[in-house]
Image (cartoon, rainbow, N blue to C red; front, side):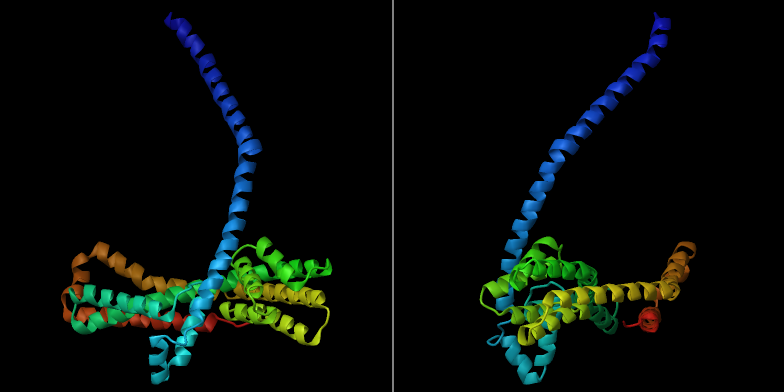
Length: 330
């Protein structure tokens, strides 16, 4: 009996494997042919519906954000001569897709600074705690800048296809607002969301030139400014806007190629900057593992705190300096 069981076990195992493979293939086929198309269609419909509602919501927020005449913060900034800085902060927030009032953002900055000061004052002295608080307060500005730069890079990559889509739509006989609405539906975010916002703003009463100008203020992209300027000039002087869109798309595509070549040429410098920036932290971690008592002196002695603060400040200055050296504006 045991002999028969041993002889039959390989066939039984192969049979189980065959049944498993057959069931797996059947489930994969059902998913690919029936379930996945339904999920894709549902996601597309939900994205279009959500994008429409998001555009309307952003238009309402923009209306409230840009009406700051009666705010207490604006009055205080006007008395201190900092009204232009407040407007610049509002512009940076919009360029980072953060639809907040400047007062709300500055409140968050103050809260982060107080949090950093309170936590560090328990371990170090007052003056080092002030530096930590200032560093914590700078973090929201850094996040805004990173988000703004990311949005700008994505939009610049989307611009050539969007210009070609607008040009084809205009050649097909559509008006400019209808072409922008089509681009808002077809182009992915964030450029698609900006196009939807432009369409909704002009539908609610703004001229197409004013809506595009406001979009140019919400996006820190020189390529997008070409598009806005071309449309504003065309509304005043006339001309073949479809051909202008094609030329702008070609120009942006060539600029992206040039930026890619510059990125390749400066790759060695950027890698050197990353290595030099990370090397002090790697050495610090290595010393912490190899000789913990040697590193503990920096935390136990008052001078060690100042030495670490000076070292971190020097590293930040070096990073900014190397970044400026390898950065080439196109």
